[in-house]
Amino acid sequence: MPVTGPCENPLKKRPQPQTGAQFSKQEFLHVLRRAGIPQETIKEADDQLHDPVDPVRDGIFLVRHGIDRDQLVSLMGGSS
Image (cartoon, rainbow, N blue to C red):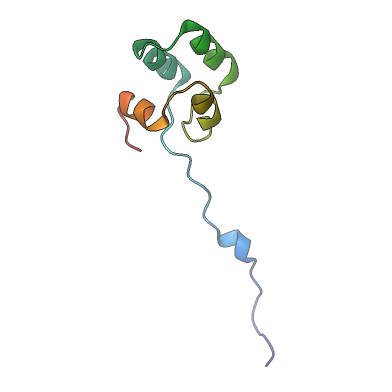
């Protein structure tokens, strides 16, 4: 049986991954200070992370420094 009609790329319809809540870098650094994160880690966050900070995209940084993403989102007033 011949196929008729335009052929659409199935990848074109894929939803883009959602990254979750984003926060300004200044807000993120403020929460780290308020949570008692060491100043060395805060300086590293300031040097390495983009603005805005995305807890999903930047999850590797958070894990490497023992910061729980869900707890951080909660501290910042969001929901995961």
